[in-house]
Image 1 (cartoon, one colour):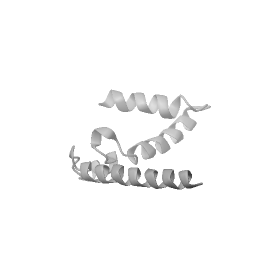
Image 2: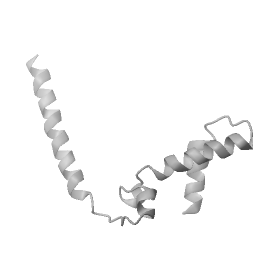
Image 3: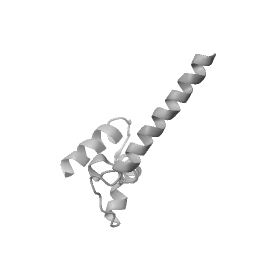
Image 4: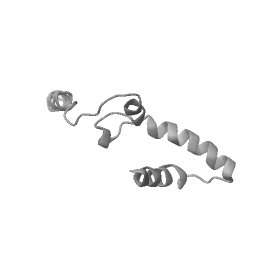
Length: 88
């Protein structure tokens, strides 16, 4: 797992920046770690690393009902948009 985080840090944060010296790298990594820990991760089933660190328990099906409801709502909204466009 550490290798995955290391790769992510390199390719999404470090290699995309032109960092002049080690001081710039250190400062940028501090911000990168905060950003990384604040984003939901698929392996954590929608939780952020920070939430899991603080005790949240990622369960595979925890958000399944919410995702299903959101999908249905998007379909309704898309149909409403299509109907409005057809009426023009």
